[in-house]
Amino acid sequence: MKYFASAVTDIGNTKKTNQDSVCVKIAQSEKYGQIAIVVLCDGMGGLDKGELASATVVKAFSKWFEEELPLSLKRLSWSALSDEWAKMAKEQNYLIGQYGNRIENSVGTTLTAMLFIKDKYLIAHVGDSRAYGITDSVNQLTEDQTFIAREIKAGRMTAEEAKIHPKRNMLLQCIGASRNVEPQMILGKTDKNSVYMLCSDGFRHVLTNEEIYENFNFDNLSDEQSMEKNSRYLIDLVKSRNEKDNITVALLKCYE
Image (cartoon, rainbow, N blue to C red; front, side, top):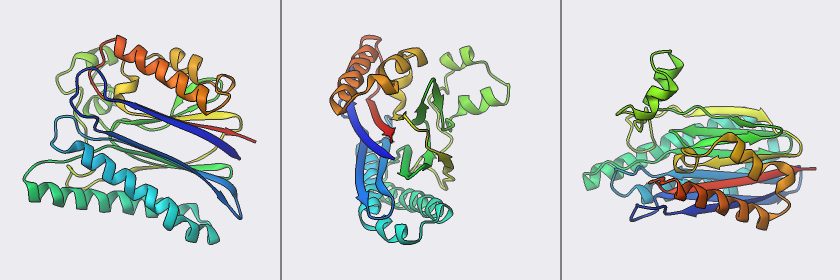
């Protein structure tokens, strides 16, 4: 599998700082050809130093990709990689939590990360940022770890009720501000001629799947420049609809 990618982030309409952090890296391996990692974290808007928390977690996964993964590729085991990522998420939760205790402030971030090797991908997910697969439609791969998502799934709330519920922004867990985290780990098969999208919640609140598909389908993304152009178009559209959060989207196109 071959890849090209882009990442675009915007402070948005009202925030004084951009608490989103994002990283996309593509490397050449001897045994498996191109490999790629995409990591997106959204620092908690109401929590102090959210930008530091998100950047710290992104940096940890980026460093792992460069320094630890080459050793793991010698004897590739997806279950071992999944265990490594879950352990990393829990370590970051502890370290950021300890930092928050020292400064007497709660510090937190979401985490959505994807690793691509050959014809498979691995996802580690905590919070309400999202990963999508885009083929002939837009498919959400991760589950929101939020109060309203839990209530909707249990049949105790409708989607319309969720839009105005006072706890609509409440996370069930996040890196750094939870006593313990249990990341959602997903192993999947990479679709040929597909696009994968990671985004913060600020990107997706006011967009439809049709608008996402129209701009991010495989045929519409011919190179990194078209990715960035279409990403910027949708971010500007989101801002015009009065989204108040930071806005970040990362794209990875997979082809043979």
